[in-house]
Image 1 (tube, rainbow, N blue to C red):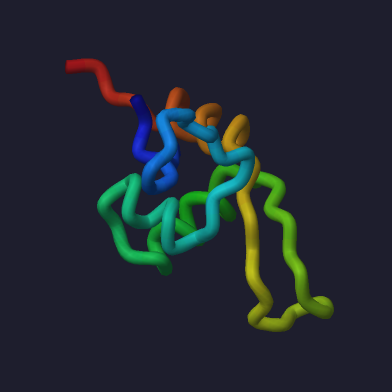
Image 2 (image 1 turned 60 degrees about the vertical axis):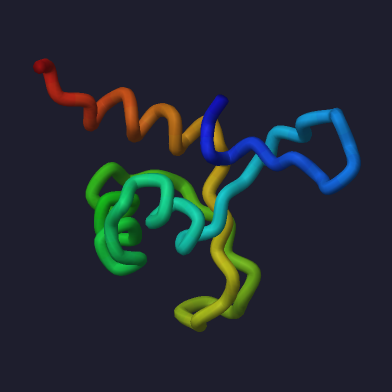
Length: 77
């Protein structure tokens, strides 16, 4: 189970989130929000922005894009 799975209190159904915010992504990757944003920019990942151009609005990243970035960033042990 990924950290993006959410379990509501008193509910046995697990709802999978379709989008993650930058802070949620930073927690998932165990980095700062700034580093998470830089990784998204470096990989040219499309991000949904709910603010005017250039503003500090809420940004959402599709889960599929996150999984794609993670698969490209994996290191061989």
